[in-house]
Image (cartoon, rainbow, N blue to C red):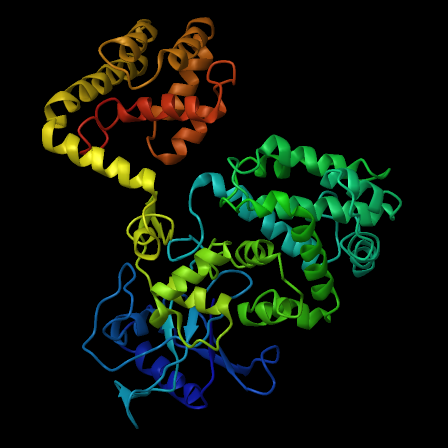
Length: 540
C-alpha cells in the first residue's frame, strides 16, 4: 500500500480524476482510491489521507511526469522541463516502511501550476521501499542490519507496547521509567567512581523491572556506536553488569548480543565520558513517550515531525549525541546517522537551500537536506547518502593534516611511479592462482589446498604471512569444513558471500576483523580478476 498525506483541499479532487485517467491507458496503475480524513495528524491543520491500492500507481506516474528541474534524481526517474522552484517543507513516513516522503510545494509566482496541478498540491518523492533501494539515510552494509532489526524490535515491543526487550514478559512501563528518574536522575552520584559503580549505588535497590529497563536502555544507547568506539565485548559487559544489579532479570538474548558487535557511527568522546548524561536523556525521552496516550504515542513513532516535537520537550543539553542517535534508530529512512552537533552545523551551513527554512526544527532540516543529495554509496545494488564519504565530506569539512600529507605522497607516487606496470600484473596473477584453487575445488581435485597455499604465498603480499598461515593450517587440518566455507564464498560471489564464508571460519583460523576481511577479500577477488564480471572460478 501507499499512503499519501496532503495539506491541500484540491488534492482529493485532483487525485480522484488522476486515478480515473491513469486507470484507462495504464492497467498497472490503481483504478480505485479511498479517501479519508487522517485523524491522527494535526487537528489544527487538516490533512487528507489517500490510500492507493498499488505501490506503483500515482507515485510512479508523478515521478515520471512532474519532477521539476533541479529536483534530486532517483533511479528510474526522468527529468521534466523547468517548472519553477519547488522547496521541501515537511516529510512523513509510514510505520511499516511501505511508502513515500511527502514534500509540500512553494509556488514562485501567483497562480503557477504544474501540468494542471495546483502548486499547493503535494509533490511526491519516494525515499524508501520495503527493499531498501530508495532509502537515502539507512546504512545498507550487512553489518548494520542487526542494529536496525534490534531498534525495530525495541520500538514495537517496548515503546508501542509495554514488553521487555530481552524476554517475553511485561516491562518498559511508565512506572519503571519514573523509578529510574527518581533513583538515577534525581539522585546524582558525584563521586569519582566509574559509571557502573555509581549506577549500582543509585539503582541497586530499585525494582527489578526498573533495573531491567535500565539494562535495556543501555543496550539501545550502545547500539549506535561502532566497534572502534566501543567494542562489542565491552557493550555486552555493560549490559550484563547492570542486569546483575537485581535478581530475576532477563538475560541478554544471543541475537541481540551479536547486534552489539557492529554499530553505525563513531559517536565521539562524550559518548563514553558523559554516558551518565546520554543515559539520563534516554530515560526521560522514553518517559515522555510513555506519558502520551496510545494514539498519540503511535503517531509520534510513525510521524517524524511529531516525534521531533516530543523530543523537543525533553532537555537535551549535553545529550545531543543520544537524541540524534535515537532519531536515526527509530526513523532510519528519514534522519541521517550524524550525531555530532558540530558536524550537523557544518553540513547545514554547506547546503542551506536543501535544508529549507531556518525556523524548521533542525532534525527536519537535516532530513530535507539528505533527501536532496544524490546517493554516493552503492552496496549490493542499493544506494544511500554517506555524508562522511567523498564527495560530500570534503564539501562540508576540511581535509585533516594527515589526509593532506597522504594526498601529497599519492600525487608524487602517481607522477614518478608506474603503478599500473609495477603492481597490477602481480595482483591479477595472484587472483588467477586463487581462481585455479577454486576451479580445482569445483572439479573435485584433491590438490586445491596446495593451489590455495600457492596463491597466498607466491609473489604476493596482499595477505600478510601472519594472517594466511593460521588459515592454511586450518585448511590442512579441516579440509572438509574449509571446502564448505570456500564454496559459500565462491558459489555465488557477492558481498553477502563474505558473511557466509566467515560464519564457517573459526576464530583460531583467522583472528580479528582485519585479518578475516583481508583473507575474504583476497579470495573474493579470484572471481573477478579483471573487474569485468565473475570469472571461471565460480564454484557450483
